[in-house]
Length: 194
Image 1 (spheres, rainbow, N blue to C red):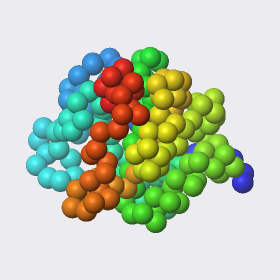
Image 2 (spheres, rainbow, N blue to C red; image 1 turned 90 degrees about the vertical axis):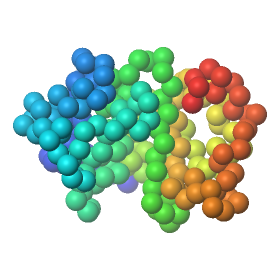
Image 3 (cartoon, rainbow, N blue to C red; image 1 turned 45 degrees about the horizontal axis):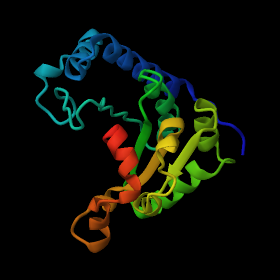
Image 4 (cartoon, one colour; image 1 turned 180 degrees about the vertical axis):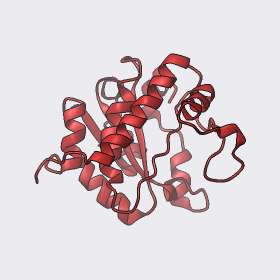
């Protein structure tokens, strides 16, 4: 497969993401960074009372919450591959580089996992180019077993967990498995409190 290059609008999306991350770097506070970024771009988020634009929600403490909207067939997955590099260049190099890549269905999960795992696929090639081919792509079963999740792997590689929303559904036996403790992950959890 041929390497992919971002289209003009995709580059604009990535430039906007980089700009937002610059605000996070300078200000240090996620809520204030979000409000200031949008204010400087002519949008007051504090005045919005609809589902489209609203004040920042800190759903995962200390982790920037970013949503990128792109039309159907706009290259969301390719933008996401590039965005991983943009986001991690703004973080302390000692932090683990861990991504939870959520997909809406098991069909898309299999396709996404295959594309991100396949060194010949343009998505994986892009990620490899951003992280010097030091990338582990993990599916739910591998994560539940704790394989490829040694402390050195987490410290030295980008680790991408490809998961579906159904993976966390507690209404069935398979969904409840993700909440069990796993002694294979003790070193990682104690070091990084993931």
